[in-house]
Image (cartoon, rainbow, N blue to C red):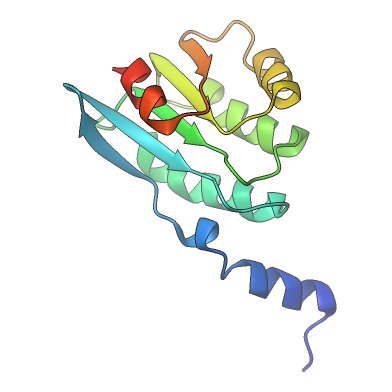
Length: 137
């Protein structure tokens, strides 16, 4: 059975480094941060959301850090991805205290701020990953 062009494209996209990059918790500067790696997925929004869904099973646990860094460099940030992220960090079981987004342009920042309006955590956008880690702790 032959795969359609769209199926082949999705198969090829699953080989992207960003899709296979692991998200993880790490101690830094006296605190622990969850690093959600959604970077390097380019325009494959479905794959970015799928990765977020899988990672959420880990970072929603009470034992995981309440500091969250979401890396979106080299990933197209559109409304579908913004709303998927907002749904996970606002409506899940996990309470976050600080959230920083890395690699987000100004227009996407405005949309993320709208989606997270009234959030019970401090929100920031920093395009330098090292500075973002320092801000979190």
